[in-house]
Amino acid sequence: MIVGVSVAVGTGVGVSVGVAVALGTGVSEGVIVAGGGNGVSVGAGANAPHAENSALSASSSSESGAARRFIAFALYFQAIGHKAGGTRMKEPGFFNNYDTSVVIGVMLAVGFAVALVTVGPGFATRNFLAEAVILAATFAVARQYLPWKDAPKERLKGPRRELIMALVGYLLIMIGARTHYSFGLAWPWLAGAMLLPVIAMVSAGYGPKAWGLRLPKPSEIGVLAVVVLLTYGLSRALGAVLPASELPSEDVINLVAPAFTTIGNVLVVAVVAAILEEVFFRVYLQPRLAAYLPGRWAVLVQALMYSAAFLPLYLYGNRYPLPLAAALVLVTTNGVLAGYFWRKTGNLWLLILLHLLAFGRYGL
Image (cartoon, rainbow, N blue to C red; front, side, top):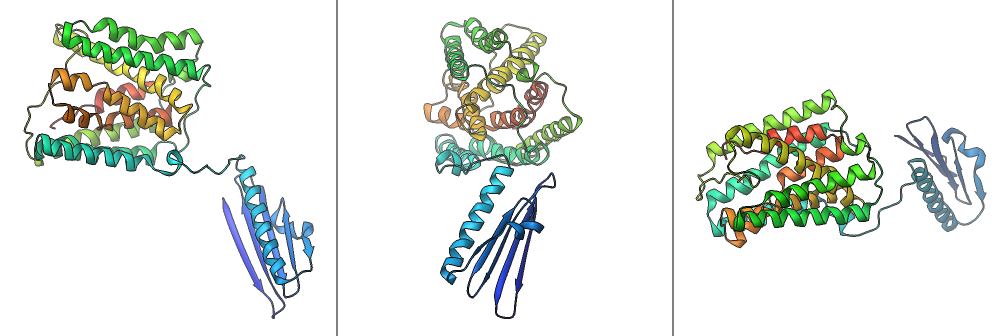
């Protein structure tokens, strides 16, 4: 968009102001305001250089001239809004005026404080301060080099019904995780929950765009590679300089088949965690949330839900106290980053690679 402003002052008889805005296709909008001691003329047309031809003349007092200038500029900005696609000014409110980055920062600060009090500085810095650094660095790269516009998505066919199904599936995930620590039988719950969005999307007839099945672009693969290298490098570097954790590191417990061999566990993680989790939380849940929330808030809400899915592990597997387990839920780095990748690329393959290569914290 090109904006030009010209001001011409005569020998005490008047002032003229011209404003021209050229939009991408070469179409321009213009407003010419000319006013003198005894009157004002206002012109608005489809082409700024010829806006004087359609000027409105008025012979009134200087106060009337000021009012007409105000009206002219109001009409001008309204015309720009129509040319830009008819977008309306956002209504005031929490979801439109507060950046989600502020909320994420507050959550990490609260979690850090809780971990500092309940465990100690080592655990707090490794699980919250380090996550803040990793998220800031990787998200800055993703935001700078991924497309600014959201990726085109297939129109939802039943957002309310599908969102309810996603919430039912999420409840089954939580029940399955909790059941594992009481009865050791989690896979029927988890398999049913993870397959719900697959069944819903197949039965509704969604196409490849909704699944994110296109091949990723080289530029997107490049951004992913930088994010993976940043995550690995920062994890190693921070792990070497930060104080040791007061608690031993806990491996994520395989809820599906704990008796599998090492190769079997790798396959389970690759298939269940990387593919089904990404399909459930990013491909299915996030777009249904975005039907009712602004896009960035849909990313944050699904990231919180993804993090909260590990709450049974923290409470019943690792046996952390409730305040500490709740604080760990506030760490949304992986969910936010994956949600942003999905929002901007709409590519499932990138999500799977991101999950497998960048969700670990090597050295922390």
